[in-house]
Amino acid sequence: MRGKELRKNVMENIEHHWPVHIKELVRNLELEVNNSNIKKISYHIKELEKAERIRTKRIGKALIAWPHDIEKLRVIYELLKVD
View (cartoon, rainbow, N blue to C red):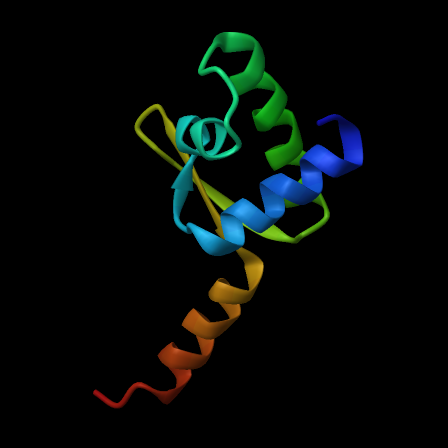
């Protein structure tokens, strides 16, 4: 897998297994967990975030990703929530 195909697979994986950590993505894509593959997936995560298709958050040293649509649902939930 390379380029757009890899990015598409990363996005599909995030949609099915959110919230997800980069190492978990590498494992789910059946790649060897090494620095090279982690950096490759990290690059695609950054590009997906620039395109506003996913959201990310750092928790300590871990980078967690989830689909942008889930964030929209969270905002709607906050608006509908009655205190």
